[in-house]
Image (cartoon, rainbow, N blue to C red; front, side):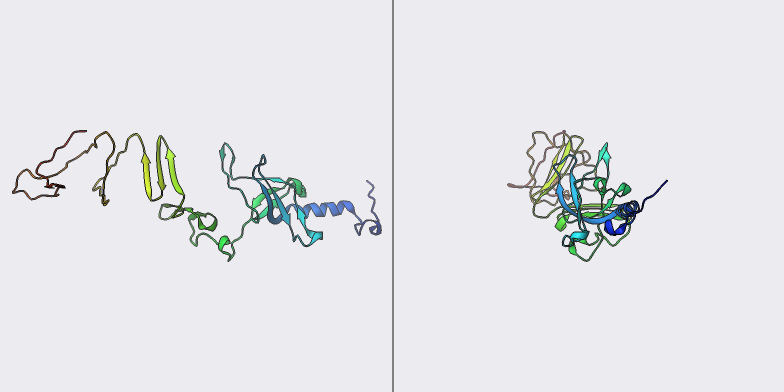
Amino acid sequence: MVKFLRDPAYTGGVSDPEASDIDRRAQDVIKFGKIKEVDYKRSPPAYRVELGDEDDEDNYILTDWLPATGGRAKGDRETHYLEVGEKVALLAEGGELSTAYVMPAGQYTEQEDEKETTDKAGVWRKVFKDHKGSISYDRETGEWAIEGIEDKGSITIRGAGCSIVMKDGTITLKAKNVVIEAEEKFESTASQSLHTGSSAFKTIGSTFLGLEDKNETPHDKVTTEAGPAKKTYAKVG
């Protein structure tokens, strides 16, 4: 094999183009930069990543559109797009930036929107931008927590023909049947209770209302608009 070396005087100081290309590819296998542009409407969605300082023309690179990636992308799918300004790492097979794989590379800093979300191991916590909602799980205590925005938005749990919606200070539960199993006590502290359904409630257990004899000591006093109830009626559901 004959290898020809070129005169650096005519090649911009590069005497061995092949060696130079190999060196460039090796340096480009991993690159760090920031998301410059996003297009979530493309198929698949894509990013353009800037490498280096935009004011330094000799060392600045703006990639072509690179496809977005997800934690899961086959069968089970997970979507949480990166945003403009977010720090990323490019993994480029063979040093080809045109086919690079874009990965998040955020580092915790003292900036409010880049701080860590917890100081405890065993806690998984995701906080959304500007602290507008969070979800977390503490492995030690077994506690799940879902927090929304206090004065707007809603939290919805839906499945198996039922739904629970929390919105504007009201919890709306929809289901064909509702069963409450309390081993010791069920307590309501509401100032008003209104039942608008056409079907009667069914109580399983014992209910003590009113008195059978005036000498009995009441456990619970039943009062109506006309005064203390003298008789009560129960209907089997």
